Image (cartoon, rainbow, N blue to C red; front, side, top):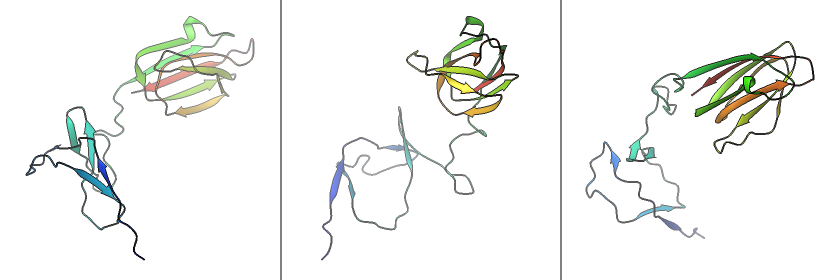
Length: 159
């Protein structure tokens, strides 16, 4: 018994894509169905100015940045931790860091990251060594994990 074909209408305006000349410019209705077909497809991304065709690298991977990582700005913070969070070890930013590398030396530390709403997150225990985080955050603060055992931190934030 053949499967029943199902169609769903797409009600989000995703056309016209830049770089294409359609006739007619707009399709009145767009649908998605439950049938699999072999097609030549264009991958399209939505922007505030309409939609744009996405590109791939020569190896076939999705091209996501015009430079190596897409991260063009970095900042460095270094310091010696104290036993409680303090102004000297608290670093806040107007623009978010998308990823960071943290190196802790001498003794374990604790850190907290600030989210977009301005709320500091739960403590993260940082043993001596290096840590790489890929998380959007608007600030970082450090303190000692154990009272009186000062940790040294090196923070590299990238956006």
